[in-house]
Every structure is written in structure tokens, then in C-alpha cells.
Length: 225
Image (tube, rainbow, N blue to C red; front, side):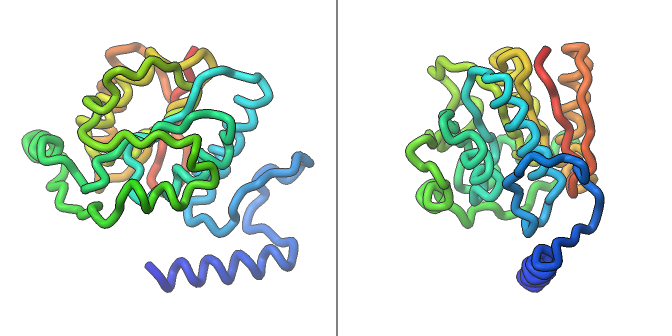
């Protein structure tokens, strides 16, 4: 993974020096955009930047959140693109919760043996460009959402497993401002089939649609009507 990142960085820097691009994404847009071309999942990040621009143009109210932060790689850019909004960061900061692991196994979705414990809330905050806007919610979600009296305009759900993604949709969707966005990661990732199950179940229950995007793990986007 280190070698891939190193190659990606160096190749990206060379492309930038040559004013070259690998594709024609937004070729005719003259708006200055701040997107890290060395981010390994460019499509996901570029979509976030476009969504943030739409939210800012419309001056939509509401704060932002991510459930499933890990080391804060994506949260860093949420914080960057929404510098004036509170960013709620929900995570155990200790890896998968045992309750969610057992649910995943019971449903035959994933053995959930991946280790995401090599992180901490302090480490994540050090990576944030506007750490004073961040509110750490450490522990088991959705218990950690108790008592929050807020609305949201952007939410990222990246917990990998069925139960926390489903509960994230149940909690956040009714609290979204009209025109707000929810990103759900890993929906077209066959290594985490619980994400797709959660999205399909929630969408059927609520009779709502989503937009799939071709990022590296197949995210989907909900827009609150």
C-alpha cells in the first residue's frame, strides 16, 4: 500500500507539472476547485467537493457528520469544505463493535475480522484543518447520538457493516435539511455486503431512491427532498 501511495503521489505531481489529466472530468468548468489529485479515491473526493459547492451556493443550513471515521482521511476534507459548520465525528476509535460483528456473522454478510483499532480521537483531530469545529462522539453508534439537537446538510456513512449503516440512515435521514446529502460508502463493495443490504432495506422501507457513483468502493448518494 505504501508503494502504491508513493507512486500515486509522484505520478500525480508529474501530471500536475504538465498540466495534464487522466480524464476529462469537468473539462469545461472554469470554477477554481480545491481537490487533492493525489487522493487515492479521486471520484469520491471530487463528488464531495461538488456537493459542498452546491450546498454553499444555496446557503443551506445544517451541520455535517461522519459515522465511521477511522483515521480521519475523508473527514479531513469534510472539515475543509465545510469550515463554518460543526462536524460530528462518530466512531468507536477501537475498531468494529462486537455487537455489529455478531450481527454481520448471523446474517452471513462478512466475518468482520478487519482490524481498524490503530487510531484514536486525538490522532484524528490532529489531521483536521479546523479542529475546533469538530465534535468527537466516541462509542457505540447510535447510542452516541443521544441528546443531539441538530439538523444536518451532509453526512458520510462509512462503517462497512450492515447494522451501523442501517441505523445511520434511520437516524440521519429524517434530520437532513431539504437538499442535503448522505454518502454511503462500500455499497458496491462485495467485501462488505452489509452496506448494500442496509441501503436496499432502507430505500425500500422509505420508498426513496439513491444515485450510485463509480468511486473505488461504489458509494451511493441520497438527496433529501
